[in-house]
Length: 397
Image 1 (cartoon, helix red, strand yellow):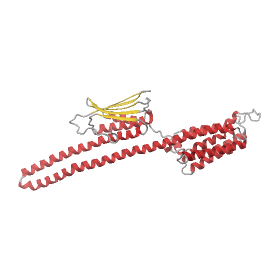
Image 2: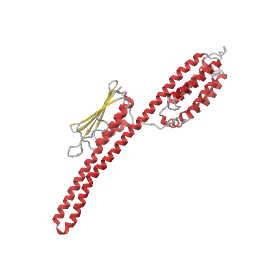
Image 3: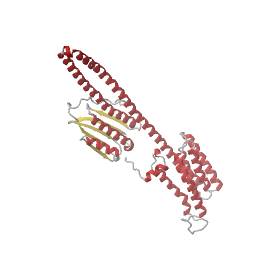
Image 4: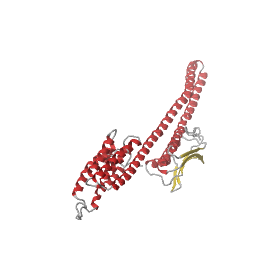
């Protein structure tokens, strides 16, 4: 999707690290601070006159003071590394303990503190110990100030629910990051293997050919004055060998195209199956020119990424076949449908396909799934000399 850079996005990036990919959620979460002003809804000591929204100054000003301290701690906690999350978490909890004697809704700070515990360390057991310690301290203060025990019970239920929500969100984010690294590593290894293959093929092709060209050229030079006809025959042989070598090099390089699409499919299998989505592909005997193969690889990459992120599918399939002088690539899934996200990816697919006089069609119905079909014209057999598409690595059927 298109990223918009506005002043609001700039300041969001200054307050919350962009690498956390939290968007505006941390700012929405500040809305829970409104609970600190709930005492405005209650009558204090029989007084019905309105102070500030019905809130006595003895509660209002301490509450505003703690908010002024809380906001810097809140934003810094998102940047914390090492011991910093612990320090910020305890400081936020301390605000709740300090405010509780005058404002029973200071438990809001305790819930914020428990939410940040999900950023401490990497082991669930250690995080749960911190949660238990904060809630135990809160219970002790509840008893000391003689507040109803249901405040502690309600706070515990909400805090534990928020903690596990943040914990599992963090774990999923970590797994997505590891998956992206694996995804990129597959592509890198596929590219490295392809470069090595090309190097071997070119060495095998050109090593012998260049030796033959050098030998015949040297022989033609020696025969030039003594036997011009024989020298001409040798020069003709050099020309023929060079042209054959050029044809062979073109065929060898055309294999890059197959490997490019093959690596995308291998990467797609890793991406989808690690997310619990079954992936299948089916290829006909199709020889693709370079620009067509590149367009197909781009479409596969964008479509598979869209399936993984938005489709909620159980199965996905890629088919490539030729019909009436056209390459037909289809990518389908059985997800929720209506899952195509407009943006640079979709625009890039369509522009690349239309630049090759092809067409791209998307069928996406709610509850049925999504099917993307690309049709690209193929040159005649005399215009292209490329082997059929190779079987993708890591994708044996």
